[in-house]
Image (cartoon, rainbow, N blue to C red; front, side, top):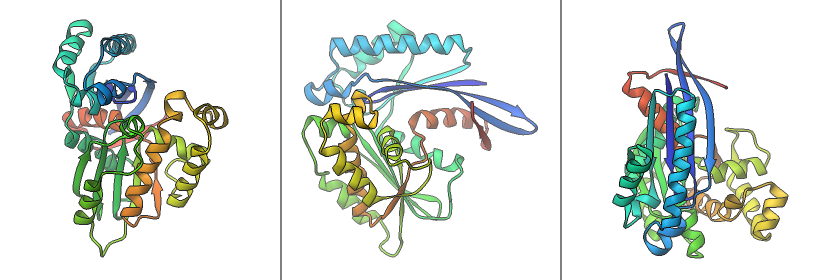
Length: 299
């Protein structure tokens, strides 16, 4: 059973296709394809309040391309979800209608709470230590989702309308006080926490630091690489660290968000397991089929 998940974010759109196969009484999940198109919808929405005609056309063309790939691979289940940019757009109803008319796709706009829930669902499926306490931080272009995990169980979660594209456009460096107030209220002062970071920017930072996937990285290391990047121009970052154009400008505000949240939480290190909303969409579709136990295999 092949499943396609399309994640329409504020900085980019992602297509993830996986194949679930029953073999010897267990389900093997093979990741067939993961591709990304840098259609920065947040650039319009966080500046003008709505998605422009040009960005709408880019969105439609990208979705048509994704759908052709989906059809070529014989995918049985497909789901399209949008997050902060379209969620915040004044003309979001028009976007949903246009996507249906032009691409025959049903566009689902996720609330911040649903987005956080679906990203967090990865925690239960992936091979991560379950007995600890964690601050689960997902940083996107338009919003940041934080989940508090204690003893392997979700205690609380909140979505905040602050992200890399918003911070970049507003030349913002400090996080809203509401985030710190929420953390102070929800965290248990008697417990120590580690951080789990998700999102493309933290994955890029881990790569720059030459860390292995799921290897712990110290917050001081993240602050050090952030300082190094800040001294360079966007073009220099692209050349020195082999970053894409749409990554080279938002990686600094992203690291700013991760490190500020970590320090406020008393966290000294972070793990980046490299999964996100698209993975969560696939896992939720599998759970609808009563598939709870998976073994992940490489393509």
